[in-house]
Length: 316
Image 1 (cartoon, rainbow, N blue to C red):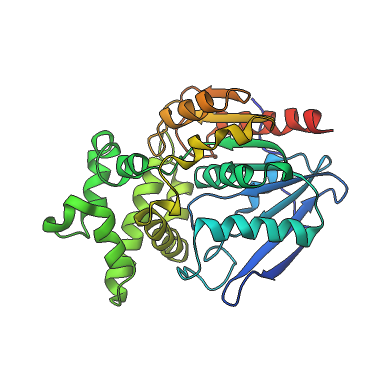
Image 2 (image 1 turned 45 degrees about the horizontal axis):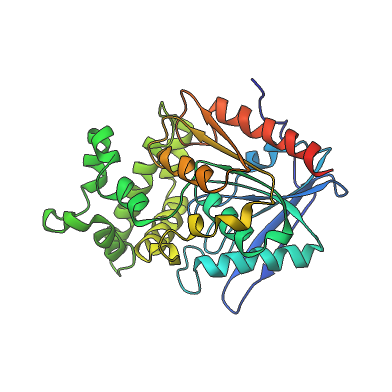
């Protein structure tokens, strides 16, 4: 089983003003003359981590990471204004143009898979290959599964902690109730809600919960951005039309693709990857046994590293 490539430092980093409000953190690592590759983090609102560089062979790839609006090192933190899916798609194009890249491989997991697919459908001529993991199609049914009823039946003990901040008379629409708390003026209630929201995700991300993952998700700075931005996106149906990704999947046909999904993913059930593959049959679907959602699962790491190695041969 392949591990991550060894840890590396970034070669350079900079900030890019994408509008009058938002400033994005962007970094490059690996070979400046390598195959351009963009990594898209999850959430929305989670931000990049150093280990995200390590899915790529640094001798083969020019690795670009950035923190999406409102999260990570981008500013302002946890900001919801001017923060939509369409904004993020156009941000990717601005970064590509800023870096002088003609085409690049795009790798994204969870929400990153959503954004990668949407970007590829909007700009197929700019994508040399796609690797998507833990597919999230962003439909109402996908949101309801994790935030209203579905995963709650698999994790009833964790679920009780998730619903604790919400009064019983508002639990028929938990997303709306959480959104109200996370965008309200009561800082104590906002903090409590953010930690409960983020903890629920951290507890369910791996097949077997990992303390390192949970520690990351319960960090308050991280929890505020991921909870606020996710609730903002999800209450707005991710700013997408109904089943948008599947309906536009014909635009992906000419793009080499690998779809990677854990068999026991409880955040984004496997059905979403299966539906994507039915619509995008030129892609390869890899169902990883005995794995949950997180990119930190050893067998998911193995599949992602093998995928970047495969695509390095396909692209050149």
